[in-house]
Every structure is written in structure tokens, then in C-alpha cells.
Length: 116
Image (cartoon, rainbow, N blue to C red):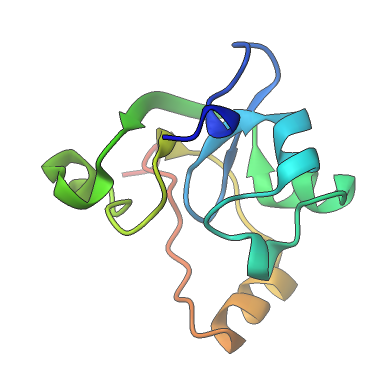
């Protein structure tokens, strides 16, 4: 796990609405999302950080070897980079971004389990 992806503080944490990676607002703005940057373009884009991440999430998982973890498979994060991930992320992506994901061959599934 890269030290840069681990949140440096428990303040201003946000989770990516696509992959549930947890980082601070500044980390998303400075570095983007290690899993979704090609489509979400969060790096140096404050508006997209607000649109594509949420401060309303539950629980956290530290994924050191996501490809080998049954917990990561259960959470659908086993193909993502090492990092800290939310268990559930509340919020919805804008329709335009969902369309961009679809055009890129990515099927968006909400990570919001609060309504289940």
C-alpha cells in the first residue's frame, strides 16, 4: 500500500462513489483516484471531487492484498489498488458521469448499502 493513498488525518475524509477508496479531499484533488482517475478526472478538479466523492460513508477496510482477500472480493474491491476503502458510500454520481463510465466499458453499481 502506498503511503500517499492512506489518509493523513481523519478529518475531511471522502470516499469515491465508484470504487469507495477513502482519502482526504486534498488527496483526491492533488492525486486523483488511483482506481478511477482515467474516467473521473479528479486530479486538480475541485468540482469533480465534490461530484464523484462523498463525505457520507460507513466503515473502513484496509486492503493490503486486495487480490487475495475474501473481504475485498465480497466488497467488489479485489481488482483495485491497495488502500483504505469504505464499506458503504452514500450518494449518487451525476447521469453524465455514469454515461462516461458506460462509454468506457465500466458498469457503475452504487456502493450505497444503506437502503438495502
